[in-house]
Image (cartoon, rainbow, N blue to C red; front, side, top):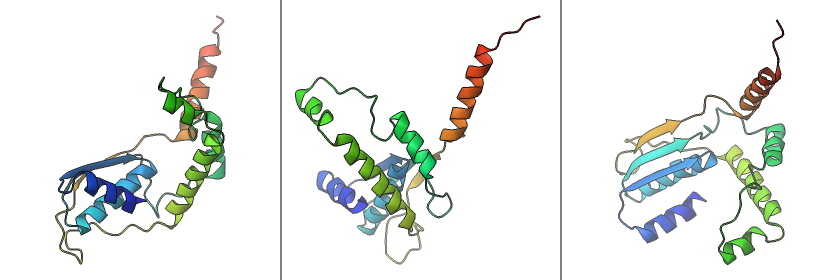
Length: 163
């Protein structure tokens, strides 16, 4: 998938320099796209990774977490409302949209399980521009911790103190 993104990036802006970023697995795609752009001798000035899992060190999402995200509408964006443009409304209401998004999400999880990132060091085998500066942001809590905190806050708010 990163190769397809790089092809389109270079088609739209053949010379760069580029700023790339992504959230979650999108961060992994941005990392790989930056590596591929460097192989093409293109300059990537910056790389922004937001809650991107680190392949090989963070286990893939558990089935319980995937089911929770699906129930919350995170995977299929059930809660989002389409813009009033007719073509977008038509796409939004397309039969099978949720199943297609869910299948894409699961395919991405599977691809991440087998992804083995290559180095971005300056002394790599190819003559490439220096690696990009990278800003990494990670949430302090995951999905489950956030839910537990919300439950605790809701329970505390519903308690009454009788002196």
